[in-house]
Amino acid sequence: MTFELGQGTGPLRGVKVVEIAGIGPSPHACMMLADLGADVIRIERPGGQALTGGSHDLLNRGRPSVALNLKDPAAVETVLQLVEDADVLIEGMRPGVTERMGIGPDDCFARNPRLVYGRMTGWGQTGPFAHVAGHDMNYIAITGTLHGLGQVKEKPQFPGNLVGDFGGGSTYLVIGILAALLEAKASGQGQVIDAAIVDGTANLNAMGAAFLAGGGFKEERASNLLDGGVPYYDIYETADGEHMSVGSLEPQFYEVLIDLLGVRETAPDRYDPANGEALRALFTETFKSKTQAQWVEIFEGTDACVAGIIPMSEAIKHPHMAAREVFVEHHGIVQPQPAPRFSRTAATLSHPPAPQPGAHTREALAAWGVGDVDALLESGAAVQA
Image (cartoon, rainbow, N blue to C red; front, top):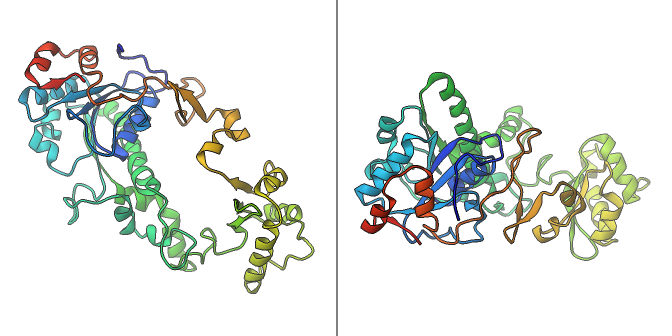
């Protein structure tokens, strides 16, 4: 495989990003930047690391993999050479690690003062937990967000690692990078982005903070408007054991719901809190009278705000998803397209994930202008898989 810079099709074409490989949110952020046209070079340790890698790891798509032994001064110097002509560096290590390696912010700014230095952590660069290990659910636990998730009163339900790692993490890192790139164009100066999952998750939950400030919010699961506390915003089982999502909040949408359910004559007044359980029981019994496919035929495409809940393998073939080509097959893997969409600089998928760390060391370093790659390989500072 050969690499040539500046071939991206999205709006970030020409932006150059050095990625110090991590797991979870930092590779997801780099995937998004690569999806949108940036030239990203992924620097991995020889042999890779746990929980990431391989030809099916879509978080690593769109960029070459270079294996460098960053305990070797020649490898550190190679990273700093890449930084000299880069716009962004992204790392997801604990605070202070890159400083000890010799590729911290000060080291990089000495080579390139306009560099945007993105740091992705769970707890942030400061605070009493900054150097403590953690994972998604730990981070969202202390923000007050996990406490309210789920419709089971007995304990919170965590939605995989979507809310913390990717919602409050990589998404906010990318927002910060794009904002800092705009500012650097005007000032000529880079800066450090402290992207912490605790910060992003708290910000993501601003509506929850607003509800709490309003005085009517109950800090109890399945007790509020959007957490299953009302019967017209909830999930219902169908005759075949599948489920439907019901989000008929507004009055006009609720009217469509009860018409298509066929319960207009028997549904009690939804505005009387005393009728809540009776209305929920009616909806529960009614949805169990038909299969999911039957309800989908009745509801989807209407203004009832009702949709079938389907697994990803079926989502790929859903008529709306298929019409928009949300998922496509690329290099033999069905995967989501870049998002969002642009009217003039449409983003398209490029390189598949590297099959193994260092699969592109020689070609990628040469494309980025690093001299004497053979010497790096011979010394062991760089490794070609």
